[in-house]
Length: 127
Image (cartoon, rainbow, N blue to C red; front, side):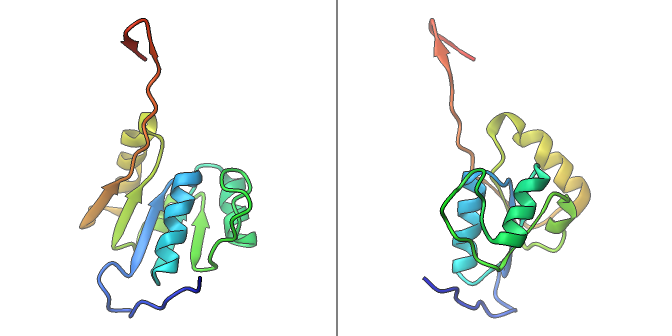
């Protein structure tokens, strides 16, 4: 697949992704292939560096080449100019991470929560 070019004035031309795991990286790749500029924040600096320099995430999504349109950083400031943010952090950390990023970037029009939740059930209790 090739990257499409979104017109600079297109709505949601710059997408932010909050989370550099498999889910966040995959969403960043889909947005880049759709022609969007993508800024990805990863908690782990080594994940951000690998995505930025090698266009790959061998830690969470090995074997998948990533678009050079994805700008990755361990600094949340990378999300400051985004039109929308896809929040793909683990569910147990999502609230704290979103509060942190909104303190940095301010209120934006759209934050989409794309959570994958795994619950452990034992003896009829969820924990």
